[in-house]
Length: 104
Image (tube, rainbow, N blue to C red):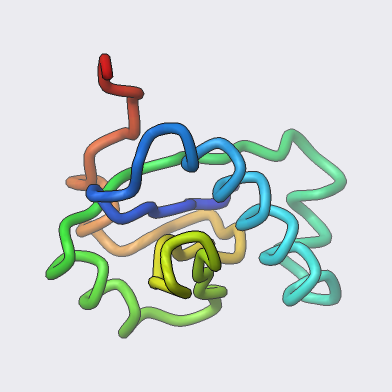
């Protein structure tokens, strides 16, 4: 069981750690009574942080059980999606790239 956090690929690296921390907490707060969230919190709570293009990000908003985050320092731009933990995700999640910081 894992939580996916998907960040847009044009977000500055220096903001990603804070955004993902907020995403994890926001997702927990939104789904704290969800059976999957409870199971995840009582086990090993794995998280996967991925990046997505604008198109991929928009397509992921058609999925279910997620919270959308915006960033005030970027004029309230949509920056991340955090999905309530589950055992299985649609195949498209497997094709997302893992986030790694770029050398600036």
